[in-house]
Image 1 (cartoon, rainbow, N blue to C red):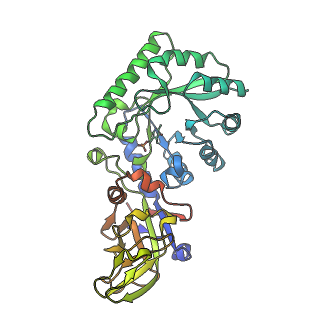
Image 2 (cartoon, rainbow, N blue to C red):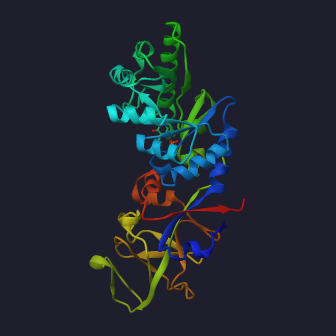
Image 3 (tube, helix red, strand yellow):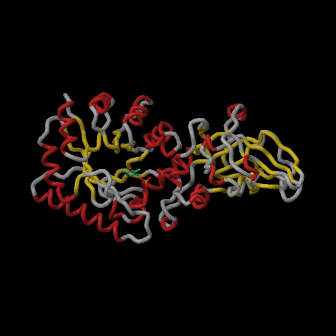
Length: 382
Ligand SMILES: *Cc1c(COP(=O)(O)O)cnc(C)c1O
């Protein structure tokens, strides 16, 4: 059971996201324990650590010996540096403008280079050595230089001033697919690129290929480093990985009951009256809505936990408020905290429940909660 911070800390909040730091610590240790000896964990904390709070997660991970972080953008990296994170920070997105390059150098971030033209931009703008990470495309067809030309790319970058090639990496496109064939094909291309570069006499830097799914699929995917995001937060990249590791979800989303009323039969609820009461019922209004990140497409489909029990949501989800049915919970009261995602007693609503209803992935659910919801650290007892 999560231990809530002192009730004063949340008394003023209408809705909030609880981040269970004990669960994140557990997940980091569990992941570290399945890594091939010598493989490093790079913790991916882009998009505010998938909504969990990048500074909070990175500070915790640093205490657990995590030596590198991955972000998508330069400002995400700067935020970590400003918070005192000292580990290396890989910017995985594409960076090319002079201003971004200068910010990278100033804040000691480490860029991803995807082609020689971009590498030249860095060499022209820099005045001191900078670790850089070369990315090759082995089948994602997004960022990266064609794997067949890896040796040539590495040689061109190594000939430029200031650039120190710290790693060579690629990204898997289908690692969460139950059919591993294309992932294995990508790995074969990665190996081929490395082999050809080595044969050309190029020194081989640190290598990395796997995301969460690749990491959990096989130690053969681990190389020198794995770039793990989703599973840090206790979410499985697919049900086929549940046997590989015991993860604990770290995010719970809660909102307070703001108002309770009794309604007769035959009353339409919320915009458009998309729900009409069939019987007399008691409804509660909770103070959270689509502007907080509760997808409006869950209207009339989602459930929430009130006093540990599942109850249905009624009518259209509005910008700031949601109506729920508390007829079955006679002691529900104004001020109660209602769970939208996560645990309450022995009941649980996992983010996968929402992603299934919405035909999306849990990544999008976790990233969708807005800054309007304060993030509150909690520690579950283990
Ligand atoms: C987001 C990202 C990851 C992490 O992927 P997960 O599936 O969340 O583990 C790894 N590598 C790159 C390049 C990414 O963009």
